Image 1 (cartoon, one colour):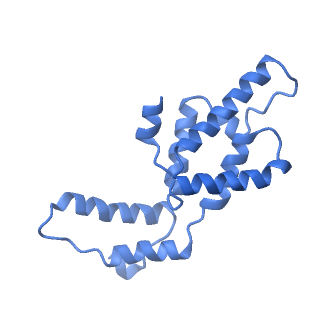
Image 2 (image 1 turned 180 degrees about the vertical axis):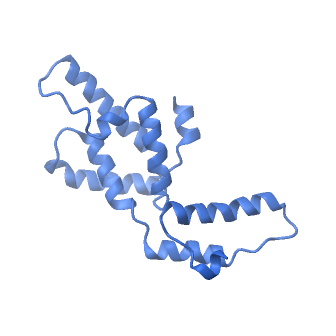
Length: 157
């Protein structure tokens, strides 16, 4: 399953939360772990075998998420979780997801500006193959759309 994870889920670098979260939800759903993260399947109240299985699944989610975070994001999330941990229940994967969402789901104005600047300054290079250049431009537009940031009308015409 690790191959599917690394093939389909992008690494969260901090600015690509929207794309990362959609793919991560799909991946966790495909391995029957999203219900734990979403809180739909809550931690069993009594100790025993079901508790142990749930704890293992919860830890597995944290491992999967950790593998898809660039180092500086992983360090940031670990510190956010460490601060929030005394206030939280035993559902650590939900706490991880919430901290990532709270910290990375909103794109900053400077990031929007940078994407718009990239789109405005984009130029085709006649000495290079056209297809990768157009894919790069499309990627900029996808990043803007994914983060719900629209180009000014004069740029998109």
